[in-house]
Image 1 (cartoon, rainbow, N blue to C red):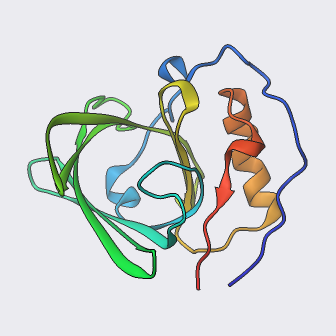
Image 2 (cartoon, one colour):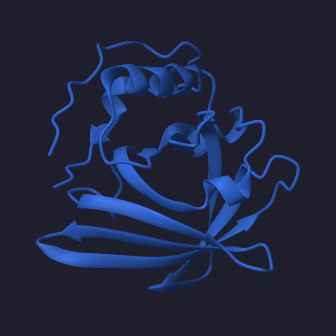
Length: 171
C-alpha cells in the first residue's frame, strides 16, 4: 500500500464547465484501452464509497460492445458488478453508455466519457454529467504526485476540484 499525498487545493478554472458539455478525449484506441484498470481516486458514489482494491476489466466483444467487470472489497467482502458498455461516439470512441448486467438494472444506462488518457494508455480519467462522479484510473494501483497532478490539470479545466476526489486504498 502506497500512500500518496494530495496535491494542493485549487479552484476550478472553468466553473461553468459542467461535465455534460465537457471536452472528451479526442480519440481512444479501443484495443489499447482494453484490459485491467485500477481505480486510483474517485468522486465517491453510493456503490464505491468505502471500497478498497477497486478495479475494472474491459473486454471488447466482436459486436463492438464492451464487457466491464468491476471488482472491489467493500465491508470486508468481495464485490463484483458486471456491466456492458456501448460506444456511442464511433469517431472518438471516448463516449459510451454503461448498463448494469449483474445486478441487472433494466432500462437504465449511465454516461461514460473518457476525458483524459495519456499517450501510453497507463492512466485515464472518466467524467460524469455535472461532475457528480469521476474516476482516475491506472494500469497500476499507484500513481506519482506528478502523474496525478497532470490528470488533475485536465479535470480542473472541466470544473472538477481536488477536494472532490478520494484515493482508493490498494493492498
